[in-house]
Image (cartoon, rainbow, N blue to C red):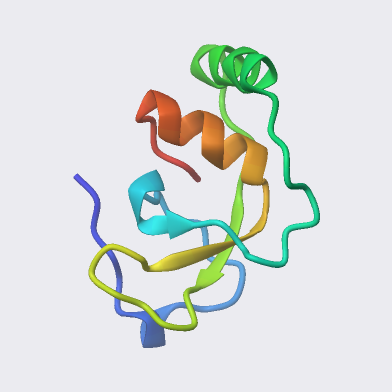
Length: 88
């Protein structure tokens, strides 16, 4: 079960288990195309071994479905979201 901590209580560089559904892409992401085959391969890799962290920050305009915005690791986030596995 996921719990969203109060953002004021978070310190910089805190590790959290984050529901991929509460994360949104950063509109300033330079990459615009994500190869679906590569995402499938990455997803399979994420399921087999421990994931690399995805860096997020509090969303500038949070809602009850958007808590976080990607800083680094959008490909990992997309693959995890597709598989429904949590992010670190």
